[in-house]
Amino acid sequence: MSDLLQKGIQSLESDGELLVLGEFCTLYKTGFWKYFEGLELQHRLTIRVGLDLDKIESNFDDLITVYRTLDNFLDIDFVFYDIQDTSNANLIILKGAFVVQYALDTQPRFKMCTYIFDESLVGDIYEKFSFNGAEKKPLMSTVSSLGLEELGYRTAFYATTKFFFYLTIGFEFLLPHEVFDHISETVSPEQAFAIQRLCVTWEEILNASEITFIMPTTSLLRYVESGYIYLTDIEYRLTAEERKAHIKSIFEGLEKNPNLTIGVLLPTVSDGMYTGKDLSFYSNYKTGFLKKNKRNIHNDADSFYVISSNRLHSILLNAFQNMKNQPSYRQYDLEALKKKYETYKPLIERTLSLSK
Image 1 (tube, rainbow, N blue to C red):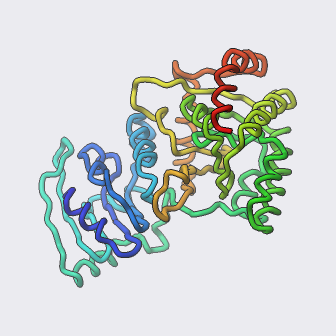
Image 2 (image 1 turned 90 degrees about the horizontal axis):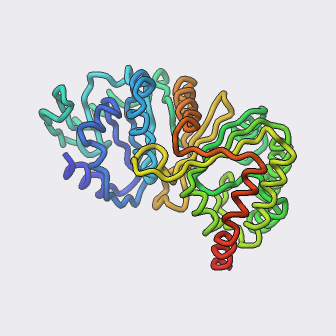
């Protein structure tokens, strides 16, 4: 099956679609998702697969499995559907190429597979089992952009006063005002106007909202070294001087708003959710999205996962919030953060000097 998937996907001459009628975590335990390692995707690949919400809610390891897989395969766009829409079909369909029928034993592991390559039959099976019906709405899907335009998704997302952000791709909040000005100078006039509007919106929100920021220390150090942020739909690298100003701006933001909470996750030897470095989570406690690290996407894959299921959003939010209970979590108020900064200031200054 590994050989079939690798060759079938690598030979795609246009965007591909793989229907996996089975449950994501169950298939993970068979080693199925390892079959996608090493793929060099020239085109987009969308994988539509079932997800058991009961399973990931009751078993934290299964939830970590989902997050880690998404984080590992940034070049693939996963679209999740409730397992009730895909249960018992046990089919894997690469549109226009092949159909695999499989059986699992209780371990679980693949017990039997049969293959269909007849073009007409593959097309008929795809049409019967595809997720094109209006009644089959995804739990989570991908988009290339969340929209900078007025009254778009992003505007609605920030129209509240409580947020939770797990950030792995730099720290794009509490930026100095001049950074927004510099970004505006590098983009189109339409984008520049949207960036300035976003600047005003964020400055007002950050001065008044209750916000929790959590960052893995590995991601924080990567930001100090590179200055890379993925702000809305725009990639930007802060200069060394802009990064210094950003640190000052963060302190000023914390001083203005005591409802801003900043925490970090120290590196651990365990391979779990907290080692993810390329997938961030944003929530306003009503809805949320995941953002990929665009510089580590090598094809035309989308950059965002929009969570349309309230239950899936709640499960993810609870999981990320529970990071505060991990032994590796450290939270800092303004004074503690200043003290920590003074301790590491020589290292930070030398690191920044290398990037000039």
